[in-house]
Image (cartoon, rainbow, N blue to C red):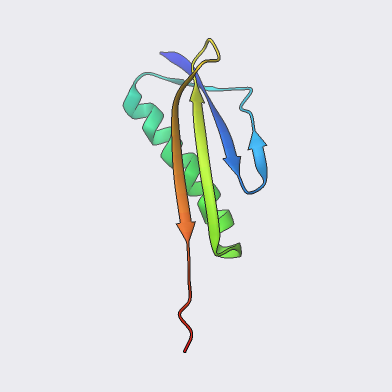
Length: 79
C-alpha cells in the first residue's frame, strides 16, 4: 500500500490534501477520485449552470501522477 494525496480544484479555488489516503491499487485511486468528485458535484451542481471539478493525485514523493476532470454544463432553451 502507498499513500496518495488528492488535491481538489473547483469553483471555490484549490484545496491541497495534506493527509492523504492509503491505497493499494490504481483501481482504488480511481474509486477515491470518483467518490471525491461525486460528493463535490452533489454540492455544487444544484447551485450553478456550469461547474468544473478537477482532482490531481500525488504520490508519496509529492509528484503528480494523475489528473481527472468532471465538467457540468446546463443550458435552457426557452421559447
